[in-house]
Image 1 (cartoon, rainbow, N blue to C red):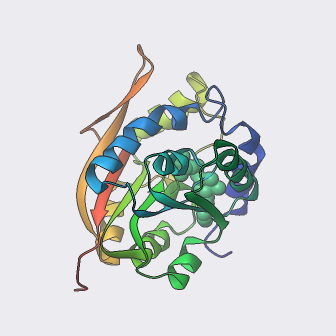
Image 2: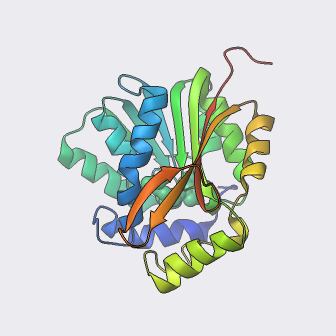
Image 3: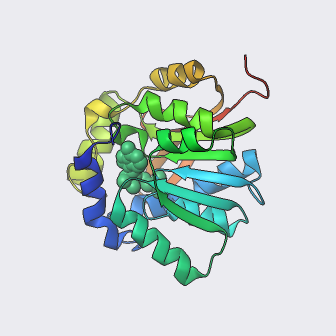
Length: 236
Ligand code: SAH
């Protein structure tokens, strides 16, 4: 388990039993899920596609993609979130979803070129070497596949909003959820994406309106942002 931080995995395992409580620490993930799901589906038309969700946690995105008719594999290295995800999918009676404890790098070596769509959301900022995850996502994707990432930008505003605001003032997230030094600038992520052989196609920002307490997708990538990439049809 080289490219994983045991403390990060333990943090998510500890909270796992509350993953599906929409009023819990995972409220932000529940709130942003319809936005990212629609965006992914608009670009990649996931129905009937072979989708892998890397760092799936308790399965909020993975399950919603299965409900849209995708065949989904969710992978993570934290045991309890995976168990919660498995139970939740079983109770929901979703046959087109499976979960596995396997690293992105091992899955890529095992099933190169296998998936039509790869999603890796809110995960890169929790791993020691995010560029290795980006490369693994490239490898497991089919030629022509869509690959999606989302993470947090690193600048004074993201420190203010994502750490001070979200963890200390609004208490949307538990203290210590995020480590500022691990946040990723869009330019850094773009470099890893291109070095891996993927083409970045579209960036979106995610905004939070304090008054309405609603999230929305916009063009402001200064705090939370998402990027859609494509694997070229033929290798360069
Ligand atoms: N992608 C999900 C969950 C985000 S929380 C969503 O957006 O809804 C971050 C997840 O990344 C946690 O489930 C954590 O266990 C997982 N994670 C952290 N490091 C990981 C690693 N090295 N490999 C796989 N998953 C990892």
